[in-house]
Each structure stands twice: as C-alpha cells, then as structure tokens.
Image (tube, rainbow, N blue to C red; front, side, top):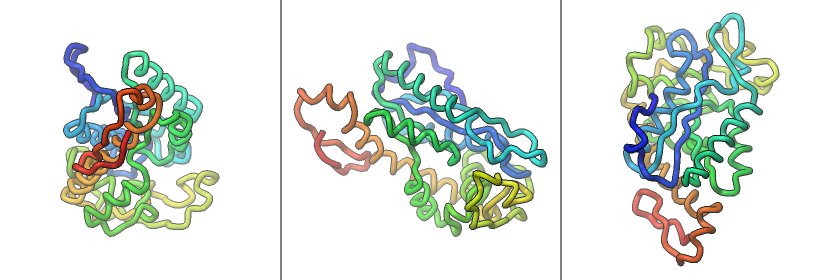
Length: 257
C-alpha cells in the first residue's frame, strides 16, 4: 500500500491522490484497515490510467461512531486534526509544483473532507462521491444500495474479494444485517443499530462485482480530473495560454478551460 519508488522515479504530474481511509471495526470478517485498503486500491487503479501521483494513505481518521467496547481496535483522530493534515499536504504539494489534490475517500464518516474541498477554491476534489459509488454499485449489478449496504456489506466485501481476497475472513456469507433507519447514528453510534458491526448484505458479495465496481470508478475519475483541471489557481495561471478542450478520460470533451 505504501509507495516504494525513489524521488528520481517519481511521476511528474499536476495532480496528486491522497488515499484517506480509517482504522475501525468492520465486523468479524473484514480487517480494521478495510477503508484504507479500499482507498489505496482505488487510487492505484486510477494511477494505472491517468497521469497522477499517488501519496501514502492517511490510515486513521474520524471513526468515533464505531468506538465501542464490544468492537476493540477502532482508533480515531479529531475532524480538526484530519482537516489540518489534508491542508498541510496540499500546501506542501503546491510548494513542490503539484497544484491539485484529490482526496480518495474510503470512509464516509470523514465529513470534514468535504469542507476542505469546499474551501480549496477549485484546487481540490473528493472522489468517489456518493453518486460515483452508486454508479459503481449499479455497474457491478449489486443488489443493495448505499443506504442499506452501509458498512462491511456487499460493496466493501466485493472489492476486497477482488483485490485482496486474503484479507477476507470466513463468515461474511452469514453476516447480513439491515438497519435502514439510522437517523440518530451520529448521536447513538453504530452499536445502536448493529450487534455485529455490520450493516449490509455481505453474503451477496463476489470478486466479479468488486472488479466491475472498481472499473466503473476508474472510468468515472476522468470527469473528476477534467473538472478539477478547469478550476482553481492552476487554471487561472494557464488562462493566458488560450482556450483548450478538456477531455474527461473517456474521449469526451467537457468544455473549454
């Protein structure tokens, strides 16, 4: 999961990817580092297709709703700390000539990442978003939506079965649990809605679904990259160079920069 190349082998790119995961319970069959593994897997697949630089992941983030004595192992940092780390990374990259940063998120509870992007003036993006995840589910033929399949379910288990099957322990086939009404989740925590730590239907997971979901995410990144290229300080600095079409990664021009 960690980049091992030297500085002389580093890719020359205007966009960097920062995988942001978590270290939190994922039931009895997926590792605590599931979200980090998924974020790194998505980032690595994107880097195979697009000219981006992949950074080492943020492995501990905001998982406070998972902190429970019945599920040992979860560790969190504050939203303020995560925000500061992201901003510091972006500033460091900018000084080194990399003006754009994409936060590749593997954990939906890191709400502060959206605020960091919102304040970045077009030089930062959050990927995948909810729409990209739902499109990936549909492309893979998954039966559950993001509402029902919230945690350690069909999607996450499928991606690990595809990319890292050795990390999936036995037992996911019989661990389905649904709790669609979670309106007090942030106040009451996960333990108010599940005894196992699972909310979703991991029994429906397969390596093929994980493969197809990942492929859909890689394709969708082209649009994210094109919009990012049109925005922010980097785009303004290029304004004097004239207009040019921006490709979304699938051969479609999205507009003029």
